[in-house]
Image (tube, rainbow over all chains, first blue to last red; front, side, top):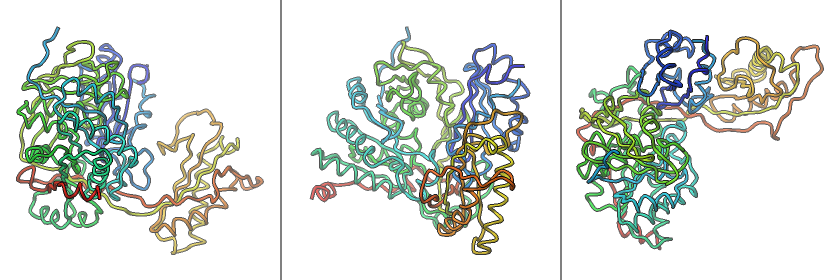
Length: 100
Length: 465
């Protein structure tokens, strides 16, 4: 079973102070067709990984770009007293070892 | 070869934000290529709530002044409008005034006399509470309601402007418009919309160019030019060595946006579902098929306020025993420090929090690391005390200092001394700030909540005196 990082370039970023967005750029059409709908990248799995309510996750597939985009609300708004990643730029890392 | 657009309105976008580093050569390329306006923003919420809560800029005054001077000289030479949105990072009133004073200083030093309009969109808390009572304030997901008290809790509240105030200021004769908080897209879309370009292409061009070179192959290589027509727009880098491709341009719709197809803007929604991206040549991309669907006019609100205070300490740890069992070490240290503060300070500590973050282990995620992991060679252990006042936060840090410095992994070991880089060991980092609002306010039109003030000759003369 490949890991996500074997078939995908991934990034994360704030989408405003209340959301994080994850962009999964698959290497090519073949990888996109094989894995874009994989259950390990479904809303339920992502919700477990980031500890958010699956019902709040937004998920988009962009076949022309070989991209899957996932957005989830932050548990607390950006910048609170326990903030560890002000720009959300490192949140993608926990996706890298996901087994597809 | 795809045909070039004709009769376009061309906007030079020199940088993602004024203060980040404008290159004069980029601006000259853009002017030579027929720019009709220069537009970009100078702010964002991206760096957190402190800038809005305090009204202070993220970028240095020197950096902003250096960039603005290049843009003001270009404005004067080319006699085209210069539009800057979200001045001073947050775009609150005092941040706009800060930018205006820098602009007046540049005008004085360079012998320029532009007509400057300033746009203010900071909002009164009582007015917004009234609007909420009238049902004109709508929460955005993941918020589900509006607590009327929240408006008064904010130190500053801004409403994000659309293009209308910029267009009105230009029609009234402004050469330079310094705007308060505005959507990134609106600043760039304003001049094309004013001259009758297509709304879909104008807004989509604004979104594409909002971060300057982010939509190019070499993202850090300068800004871009957008040429906006009735049914399409073109985008090209200002640097002759950089390029846009259909992939880099279309991918930018994903950036910092929860939805890759739709963007809610003041007065409508940009829909790029049916947009197509075609290479005109090896540097320029043509985008067509974008729509802007008008909706009842709303403005997004941003509000932030100060809350508790923090004092921090940092030690470096290379002790191999500790590094072999970091999680156990930190859990027992946290329990000990919390108990020590309660014992030594009692109720005086109030509601407090101690956070231990091992950089080099799991400080960024804060999550438990599963499975076997390589042992790091060293970690930086950050201690963060949060309390109701700076004084208490610092007293908590000082109370914790001996154990943070000397705590062994097991009680029967000799006292270690971890590596403090600073004396004094503790640093007061000041207040924590919170974003409080995630709402839109329904308004009659794009001008209703905006105040426009022209810096007339007297202001320029005052600055010169």
